Amino acid sequence: MTTEMVRIADLEIDPEQLDAYRALLAEEIEASVEKEPGVLMLHAVAERERPEQIRILEVYADRQAYEAHLRTPHFLKYKQGTADMVKALRLVDVDPVMMRGK
Image 1 (spheres, helix red, strand yellow):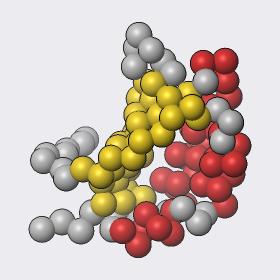
Image 2 (cartoon, rainbow, N blue to C red):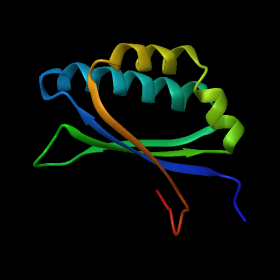
Image 3 (cartoon, rainbow, N blue to C red):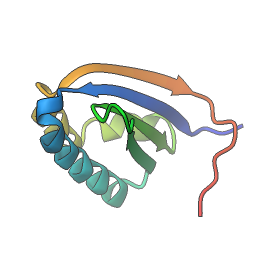
Image 4 (cartoon, rainbow, N blue to C red):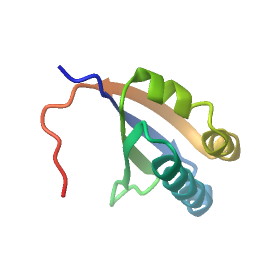
């Protein structure tokens, strides 16, 4: 049994602020993966027909790694900087069925 914590963040972004949001998100993901050993993967995608609909697949080593992530300066900067850009946020905890990468 895995102890990894996996979740999908389902976001709706203000279309007029989409470029600024994407820049902050890219900066946050880069810092999280580089600086936090417990952040195993962060993948963000946007719907092709509705680019303001963004989903992030998040994989953490465990719940403690996720909770530590929420307290990092780079995550707090992202949350504060995007607060007025995010129109809706839904966090969905999921169980991995099969995840592989190269």
